[in-house]
Image (spheres, rainbow, N blue to C red):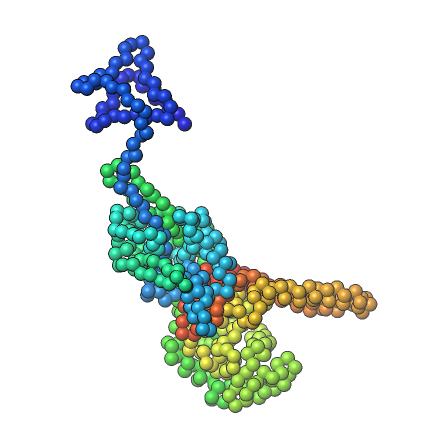
Length: 533
């Protein structure tokens, strides 16, 4: 690249020190039309051998490190926040006597946090960078910690950390912090398995992030490190981290009506309505449970629910006698449903089917409404504190059994199932890919059976198109269910060791706090498509 300057008058340059010019090729000075002079007062003009240009020293030494946003220690589910935890991908948690990664497929999980939903993927210093993800309600403001991951030894120099938002309505304050402030609390070290360690600094409550207007696309906050030499003015600036802030413009489409129904035995006080009321009231009543769903769990995916009651403002009442369950338990559809007549223990799946079928008869007007039907019952199950199906996709029913009526997280867990979430762990011995393949095979066989059936039984449909349509409906419902099962599994590809995480869809009942970022999308999609009215 060349440079040309055209000046109409004199060009005068005054330098306080030595003036030296270096060029990779020739240096030519010429004067058009007048004299060319060189004045070297004192020592005169001298000529020397060629020299390499000198290296001008600066004080810029931008150390290598990464910056991560982290939720603070007081976090209790008030907003959606997710990142790839160390224990997900490093063998640092004891599982069955051996330290293991909690993720059953760390390779897939790393892709989720490095590239999926990430704009402008970065790899500072050639190192994989895994984003944190934030999900905010409109006008919500949150406070976050800052973690500095040390790649080489840090010191309290003049390095600044800058935060640059991709949207003026995504506000972060402050926009810059001195690195010395972030590392003032001292270095910490974490073992990552074997001899591997990660050195880091954690600074609490350093920034506030606020959403002033709905985002129609995923936004981001980029994090830069900058060090400027005060004498030369030269600066070094490098992107060392980022956080993705998720699209929230569809938030109004994620509202769901939840119809609360008490279903109990009217002729045995041990399993009557009072049992339900006692459990619920011990935690502040139904309003407390609605608040938990809206402020400490489902809200992480921007879901908001409204409990709906009958015309008198009470939960819908569905009382039945013991004999009803006993009689139903010998019907073919629910055979064996009542496992213990004394303790009123029921088979979870059969009781779910019974409730689903009988509900259509008891509340025909309610059945047609969009929303979720939440059954509260004093009956018990030997295998679960609650139950819900995520297939078919439009299933509306979930049950909370006696043992979990006063457990807030169970309500979020079961509604999570209704909204398309699988358990955070594998329910069987097959991997997710193997489960999908097994269902694909069943679907292929069912489609083949359908073709063979109508080819071999064509005669019975001559003049009876209604019968053919009915039989087609039965086959198509079975095939549709297989499609729904495959759909759900493909959205729930990440699984973890059972009862080892804080995820709401895990089974650690004393530590169910969060939904992960890929789960946010699942429950949003189903809420919008099947449950929002």
